[in-house]
Length: 525
Image (cartoon, rainbow, N blue to C red; front, side, top):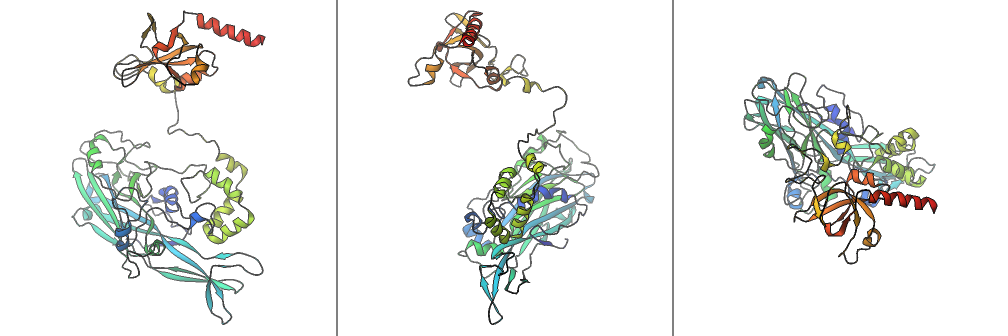
């Protein structure tokens, strides 16, 4: 186990250590700081009075009374433990496989402002503002980042008991005198006890398939925490925004949301509680879309050297291969919002509001500095970006050129289900067969107070398709002849629908003559 790596919020980062975990940081940091401090980033904002929304591992005595009654994969409710189960394959000889786990979380740190008294002592104060101007100091809760890494050989994890590691966070006090000697800022942290247990179980020796379990528990034994302790006090003894990186040497993880068919049964039996693992961007063990292209790898070695693969197990549910948009210039502590909106709103804060935000938290001050200094071209990149999951190369796919009901099906003919072919099916109306492409006149009836009938009655239209609903009733999808956007509506499937007894078939050419006559009258007008 490596030493705990500690730093203030958004402080110094550990250097890359060859684990590949640094690639996970952009997304993982968004998880770590989701809800840390919300716009408008001020202490006085009501929504910043209830903080720390995800991945809370509280002391057991409190969580079992106040936490969720039914465990789930989402980590939006307080619990005293977090459990990840996932699948991986070994590369070659499992004796050389090593599993590596990095536990990341925040530890709450109370920032208290104290005013200097006449007798030379200090007294608590909600805020301090130097008489000569300068930075304002506010009492508020901050956090420090904690990281602990565990490494174990696979063979040691398969003995039934696995390996248990301590993940405690020490308490401490830091005092920062203010330059004008008007007071001081005191930061206090209470110790938080935790442990992580790793176990592994072989599932399919021929394929080198294993199940890995990572269970982290809050083991804090604090007499000041009872079932009735307020949440604000409990958070001082909790792991906050807790999540894990999983990797190793000679192992390759499989997707649980889209596993290969041969591993689907094992994937369904994985039990994840208050967190869920997803393939990380660039991880091996599958293509970038999360699919393992080898449906049945059969016996033999798994992925080769250099294909270790990575997982991110998060209390916020994510898809496989999550990533931060390349246009995003930095974190805004709310990954569920849009950078452009938050940036524009932050720019609109008054000078006084910005001053309070800067005094609330150092991270808020850095957000304001970045937004205030954002170049126009950076802001422009946040607006109107369109991105496909895969780059388009070669001919445009057939689906992009025509509606779904016109695509070929595996049995031949046009698309559809249960033998229906909307683009070519016909329906008899007054002795005339009507199908896709037929010209008709609209005669809506029997719809009571439908005001739209008044505007559509008597107009000519073209049938796009013949549909049948689940009860067997037939409906004709039509576009209006005089609608300039008719072709566009037909392409993405926006139609008016009529029953066969509400349309009148038109002779060939009649609708074309009417459209031409209508255009002529419009020009004369």
